[in-house]
Length: 247
Image 1 (tube, one colour):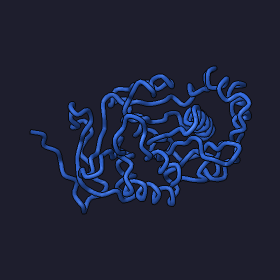
Image 2 (cartoon, helix red, strand yellow; image 1 turned 180 degrees about the vertical axis):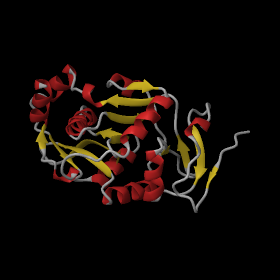
Image 3 (cartoon, one colour; image 1 turned 120 degrees about the horizontal axis):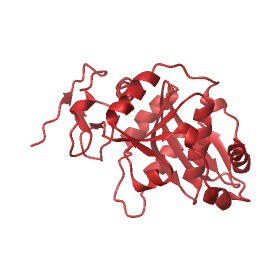
Image 4 (cartoon, helix red, strand yellow; image 1 turned 60 degrees about the horizontal axis):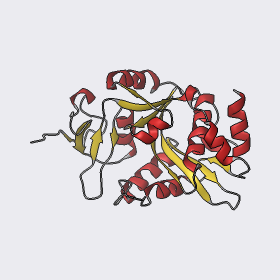
């Protein structure tokens, strides 16, 4: 029988030590609580994130190993540059946060349902309103959203939550744009949470949980550099890919 700690309603910043997380399912740490901005930020500051399906209690996780991108190594590969050649796409930051979340929540082939519930969308939209959660949007020449991602910034650690593509290459271009933005702001790591073949194919690596948590503790209180995310000027796909090829 699995016995998990129940989070207290009157202690939104208290979580069990991630070292106590279960081995199977990997990283399951606690349940209960709420999705208030205060609790969510406290979770990310401790290397913990919520992940649960509709009808389940709120479940909190800290898997071992942890999937991350090293920001300096995030580059567009040759196939993406070839795929986007001649496309008049534009990348923006924080212009359509809720819309990106709703697109990430949309059903995907081979999947039944989504873990991005209305409650999750409302919770992260509240974080976005406070300046902690951010989105990257990719638009085609008809101003249609064709890709994007969102996540939470804690100090100089960015915790990626989900991404989507409505057109092939949309999410990969959003990831390249995020990598450029994070590099300019002094973020060395992008947390991708749980590894899978797709993320590893994009260049993610796995870190032992202890090493990841050490990075979280080192980065979470560092001040961000640069202006507000929303003030980032739009970039065309051609401008972004050329800038990345030149570095």
